Length: 215
Image (tube, rainbow, N blue to C red):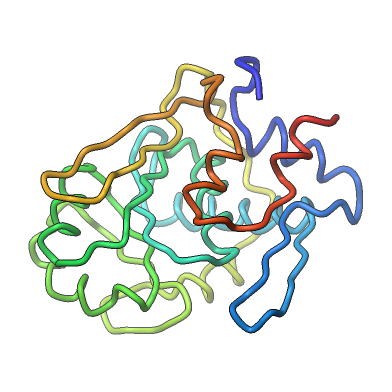
Protein backbone atom coordinates (compact mmCIF):
# COMPACT_ATOMS: atom_id res chain seq x y z
CA UNK A 1 0.00 0.00 0.00
CA UNK A 2 1.26 3.48 -0.76
CA UNK A 3 0.89 6.88 0.85
CA UNK A 4 -1.71 7.72 -1.83
CA UNK A 5 -4.24 5.63 0.10
CA UNK A 6 -6.53 7.93 2.07
CA UNK A 7 -9.10 5.33 3.12
CA UNK A 8 -8.51 1.61 2.59
CA UNK A 9 -12.22 0.75 2.70
CA UNK A 10 -12.90 3.14 -0.18
CA UNK A 11 -9.68 3.08 -2.18
CA UNK A 12 -9.13 -0.68 -2.13
CA UNK A 13 -12.23 -2.58 -1.00
CA UNK A 14 -14.71 -0.56 -3.08
CA UNK A 15 -12.47 -0.73 -6.14
CA UNK A 16 -12.26 -4.51 -6.03
CA UNK A 17 -15.97 -4.77 -5.22
CA UNK A 18 -16.63 -3.74 -8.82
CA UNK A 19 -15.54 -7.24 -9.84
CA UNK A 20 -18.41 -9.60 -8.96
CA UNK A 21 -17.24 -12.70 -7.16
CA UNK A 22 -13.75 -11.48 -6.34
CA UNK A 23 -12.74 -13.08 -3.03
CA UNK A 24 -11.74 -10.71 -0.24
CA UNK A 25 -11.58 -12.97 2.76
CA UNK A 26 -11.07 -16.69 3.16
CA UNK A 27 -11.61 -17.83 6.72
CA UNK A 28 -11.44 -21.33 8.14
CA UNK A 29 -13.10 -21.97 11.49
CA UNK A 30 -11.95 -24.43 14.13
CA UNK A 31 -14.15 -27.14 12.60
CA UNK A 32 -12.33 -26.89 9.29
CA UNK A 33 -15.21 -25.22 7.42
CA UNK A 34 -13.99 -22.57 4.97
CA UNK A 35 -16.02 -19.47 4.19
CA UNK A 36 -15.29 -17.19 1.22
CA UNK A 37 -16.39 -13.58 1.44
CA UNK A 38 -16.28 -11.36 -1.64
CA UNK A 39 -15.23 -7.73 -1.75
CA UNK A 40 -18.84 -6.89 -2.60
CA UNK A 41 -20.00 -8.71 0.54
CA UNK A 42 -17.42 -6.88 2.64
CA UNK A 43 -18.33 -3.54 1.08
CA UNK A 44 -22.02 -3.94 1.90
CA UNK A 45 -21.46 -5.29 5.41
CA UNK A 46 -18.96 -2.58 6.33
CA UNK A 47 -21.34 0.09 5.00
CA UNK A 48 -23.98 -1.32 7.33
CA UNK A 49 -21.55 -1.29 10.27
CA UNK A 50 -20.65 2.33 9.50
CA UNK A 51 -24.36 3.19 9.56
CA UNK A 52 -24.80 1.46 12.94
CA UNK A 53 -21.78 3.27 14.38
CA UNK A 54 -23.06 6.63 13.16
CA UNK A 55 -26.55 5.83 14.46
CA UNK A 56 -25.06 5.18 17.90
CA UNK A 57 -23.28 8.51 18.01
CA UNK A 58 -19.82 7.72 16.65
CA UNK A 59 -18.46 10.69 14.73
CA UNK A 60 -15.29 11.19 12.64
CA UNK A 61 -12.16 11.08 14.76
CA UNK A 62 -13.83 9.29 17.66
CA UNK A 63 -12.58 5.89 18.78
CA UNK A 64 -14.24 2.48 18.73
CA UNK A 65 -12.75 -0.25 20.94
CA UNK A 66 -12.84 -3.65 19.17
CA UNK A 67 -12.28 -6.85 21.13
CA UNK A 68 -13.16 -9.79 18.88
CA UNK A 69 -11.68 -13.23 18.12
CA UNK A 70 -11.19 -14.67 14.64
CA UNK A 71 -14.41 -13.82 12.81
CA UNK A 72 -15.61 -11.88 9.80
CA UNK A 73 -17.20 -9.34 12.16
CA UNK A 74 -13.68 -8.19 13.06
CA UNK A 75 -13.03 -7.18 9.47
CA UNK A 76 -16.49 -5.66 9.07
CA UNK A 77 -15.95 -3.60 12.22
CA UNK A 78 -12.52 -2.29 11.22
CA UNK A 79 -13.67 -1.40 7.69
CA UNK A 80 -16.88 0.10 9.10
CA UNK A 81 -14.79 2.37 11.32
CA UNK A 82 -12.78 3.47 8.29
CA UNK A 83 -15.96 4.37 6.41
CA UNK A 84 -17.34 6.29 9.37
CA UNK A 85 -14.07 8.19 9.77
CA UNK A 86 -13.67 6.65 13.22
CA UNK A 87 -10.49 5.20 14.70
CA UNK A 88 -10.54 1.44 15.29
CA UNK A 89 -8.84 0.58 18.58
CA UNK A 90 -7.67 -3.03 18.53
CA UNK A 91 -7.74 -4.31 22.08
CA UNK A 92 -5.87 -7.38 23.23
CA UNK A 93 -7.51 -10.25 25.09
CA UNK A 94 -6.99 -9.20 28.67
CA UNK A 95 -6.28 -11.74 31.37
CA UNK A 96 -7.79 -9.54 34.07
CA UNK A 97 -10.59 -7.01 34.27
CA UNK A 98 -8.10 -4.38 35.47
CA UNK A 99 -5.99 -4.67 32.32
CA UNK A 100 -9.06 -4.46 30.09
CA UNK A 101 -10.44 -1.49 32.03
CA UNK A 102 -7.13 0.32 31.60
CA UNK A 103 -7.14 -0.34 27.85
CA UNK A 104 -10.72 0.87 27.37
CA UNK A 105 -10.37 3.99 29.51
CA UNK A 106 -6.95 4.99 28.21
CA UNK A 107 -8.09 4.48 24.62
CA UNK A 108 -10.66 7.29 25.04
CA UNK A 109 -13.15 5.19 23.07
CA UNK A 110 -16.86 6.00 23.11
CA UNK A 111 -18.18 2.62 21.92
CA UNK A 112 -17.13 -1.02 22.43
CA UNK A 113 -17.66 -4.00 20.10
CA UNK A 114 -16.94 -7.31 21.86
CA UNK A 115 -17.64 -11.03 21.75
CA UNK A 116 -19.00 -13.42 24.35
CA UNK A 117 -15.47 -14.59 25.18
CA UNK A 118 -14.93 -11.43 27.24
CA UNK A 119 -18.51 -10.87 28.39
CA UNK A 120 -17.92 -11.79 32.01
CA UNK A 121 -14.75 -9.72 32.28
CA UNK A 122 -16.40 -6.68 30.74
CA UNK A 123 -19.45 -7.12 32.94
CA UNK A 124 -17.26 -6.43 35.97
CA UNK A 125 -15.88 -3.15 34.63
CA UNK A 126 -18.73 -1.53 32.70
CA UNK A 127 -19.58 0.85 35.55
CA UNK A 128 -15.95 1.99 35.63
CA UNK A 129 -15.87 2.93 31.93
CA UNK A 130 -18.00 6.06 32.01
CA UNK A 131 -16.84 7.33 28.61
CA UNK A 132 -18.47 4.38 26.80
CA UNK A 133 -21.98 5.27 25.62
CA UNK A 134 -22.81 1.97 23.88
CA UNK A 135 -21.67 -1.65 24.17
CA UNK A 136 -22.23 -3.83 21.07
CA UNK A 137 -22.23 -7.62 21.37
CA UNK A 138 -21.20 -9.96 18.54
CA UNK A 139 -22.71 -13.45 18.56
CA UNK A 140 -24.59 -13.16 21.83
CA UNK A 141 -27.28 -11.16 23.62
CA UNK A 142 -27.17 -9.65 27.08
CA UNK A 143 -29.07 -6.98 28.96
CA UNK A 144 -27.45 -3.59 28.60
CA UNK A 145 -25.83 -4.47 25.29
CA UNK A 146 -26.80 -3.70 21.68
CA UNK A 147 -27.10 -6.80 19.46
CA UNK A 148 -24.46 -6.11 16.79
CA UNK A 149 -25.59 -8.90 14.45
CA UNK A 150 -29.24 -7.86 14.47
CA UNK A 151 -28.55 -4.13 14.09
CA UNK A 152 -26.12 -4.65 11.24
CA UNK A 153 -28.50 -7.04 9.46
CA UNK A 154 -31.31 -4.49 9.62
CA UNK A 155 -29.16 -1.47 8.73
CA UNK A 156 -29.30 -0.03 5.20
CA UNK A 157 -26.31 -0.34 2.89
CA UNK A 158 -24.93 2.57 0.88
CA UNK A 159 -23.45 4.59 3.76
CA UNK A 160 -21.49 7.48 2.23
CA UNK A 161 -17.96 7.17 3.53
CA UNK A 162 -16.51 10.12 5.41
CA UNK A 163 -13.69 11.78 3.49
CA UNK A 164 -10.42 11.08 5.26
CA UNK A 165 -6.83 12.14 4.63
CA UNK A 166 -3.72 10.03 4.65
CA UNK A 167 -2.59 11.88 7.77
CA UNK A 168 -5.75 11.00 9.74
CA UNK A 169 -5.51 8.33 12.47
CA UNK A 170 -6.96 5.03 11.31
CA UNK A 171 -6.04 2.21 13.69
CA UNK A 172 -4.71 2.11 17.24
CA UNK A 173 -3.16 -1.11 18.53
CA UNK A 174 -3.02 -1.72 22.28
CA UNK A 175 -0.35 -3.99 23.65
CA UNK A 176 -1.07 -6.38 26.47
CA UNK A 177 -0.27 -5.30 29.97
CA UNK A 178 -0.95 -2.51 32.42
CA UNK A 179 -0.44 0.37 32.04
CA UNK A 180 -1.77 0.16 28.49
CA UNK A 181 0.49 1.30 25.66
CA UNK A 182 -0.70 2.13 22.16
CA UNK A 183 0.65 2.43 18.63
CA UNK A 184 -1.20 4.64 16.16
CA UNK A 185 -1.36 3.99 12.41
CA UNK A 186 -2.64 6.56 9.91
CA UNK A 187 -4.55 6.00 6.69
CA UNK A 188 -1.55 6.86 4.53
CA UNK A 189 1.20 5.16 6.51
CA UNK A 190 3.48 3.16 4.22
CA UNK A 191 3.92 0.59 6.98
CA UNK A 192 0.19 0.03 7.46
CA UNK A 193 -1.05 -2.81 5.28
CA UNK A 194 -3.29 -5.83 5.40
CA UNK A 195 -0.38 -8.19 5.99
CA UNK A 196 0.22 -6.39 9.28
CA UNK A 197 -3.47 -6.62 10.14
CA UNK A 198 -3.29 -10.33 9.36
CA UNK A 199 -0.50 -10.66 11.91
CA UNK A 200 -2.67 -8.95 14.51
CA UNK A 201 -5.41 -11.43 13.76
CA UNK A 202 -3.22 -14.42 14.65
CA UNK A 203 -2.84 -15.86 11.17
CA UNK A 204 -6.30 -15.24 9.74
CA UNK A 205 -6.11 -16.48 6.14
CA UNK A 206 -6.94 -13.56 3.86
CA UNK A 207 -6.65 -12.55 0.25
CA UNK A 208 -7.08 -8.82 0.88
CA UNK A 209 -3.37 -8.04 1.09
CA UNK A 210 -2.60 -9.74 -2.20
CA UNK A 211 -5.53 -8.03 -3.90
CA UNK A 212 -4.48 -4.60 -2.64
CA UNK A 213 -1.20 -4.92 -4.54
CA UNK A 214 -2.69 -6.04 -7.84
CA UNK A 215 -5.15 -3.60 -9.49
